[in-house]
Image (cartoon, protein in one colour):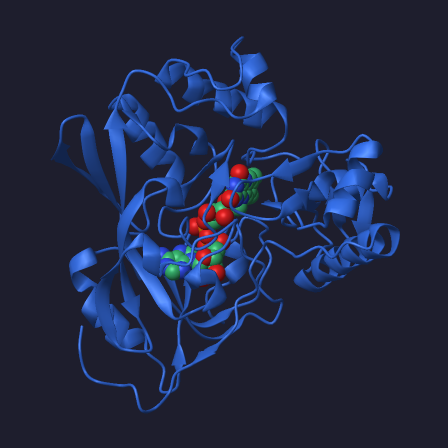
Length: 353
Ligand SMILES: Cc1cc2nc3c(=O)[nH]c(=O)nc-3n(C[C@H](O)[C@H](O)[C@H](O)COP(=O)(O)OP(=O)(O)OC[C@H]3O[C@@H](n4cnc5c(N)ncnc54)[C@H](O)[C@@H]3O)c2cc1C
């Protein structure tokens, strides 16, 4: 039997991959890409598996796990530097490295599981910071064109938890990511009230960099936003739904019911998916399906137990979404990604690395 995807995802669900390759050496990418290319399909690329729901039947093709490590720093003049991380570098390690170096720009992204290479895919973010805020460039292999090239922010289609890499799944494999950070002793302005409270600061204040980064890790642990190594909430993929866009009328109704409405300058009003779930009766700890429960701290995280399968997890997601749709007329979109095969056009196979 092939390598089990359950051994490479934080939900620990998923059957075998037909073929499983691990990418560890940046210089060996051209050979690996050549070996991984199916006759008519691109491989599925896995980072830390913390946002992936793999099928019980496994994956009928090649999976590449990105395990390249390494961080380099280049001065851009003045207080600015460009930090480049290999795709397999854990995002949390990159954040810790930058904070230790006195570099500000991603200090609120600490404690998020997964790899740096996956962060641009869903434009990973937390506490009002997202990877696109500081991304200057990334290197990606384009399976359609069979070539490696740089992509700049304007080409990445970044939005709230989305990007070109998410809307064209499987087309690009991100090999490294570069960020522009500033050498500063203070953090970016605080945008979240509970973080401000934890730091005894006001919204908009700039706390000392290391203190802000530490407060994020503590706040994540306290609110069930960390991935425990063991225990009842250890098998999970974080939030299972995105915060959904809502109309102004829906926002008014939610505010009247005491619920939060997120108002971002560059997007629609959004409701809190977790608040909507709780309103429909799914409180922390509620069983949602066979072996699938809302985590002990938050309704929006589903945790799984031994009798769960990817199928029961999917059924649980559908039950939650259906409940919110019928109660609030708001459609929830799942956040974890289900691996799927990307077909390659036979016309586009020039040999290259
Ligand atoms: C406890 C917990 C807390 C979380 N908190 C947050 C949070 O605060 N904010 C947030 O945004 N997310 C959060 N997440 C979700 C997840 O951690 C992030 O989305 C993370 O960036 C996923 O990284 P990964 O390496 O595990 O991705 P994977 O699950 O391995 O992959 C996710 C997707 O990215 C693609 N992918 C992975 N690597 C590459 C690559 N190198 N090139 C191209 N495509 C690639 C995969 O094909 C897949 O489509 C949380 C998850 C957990 C379990």
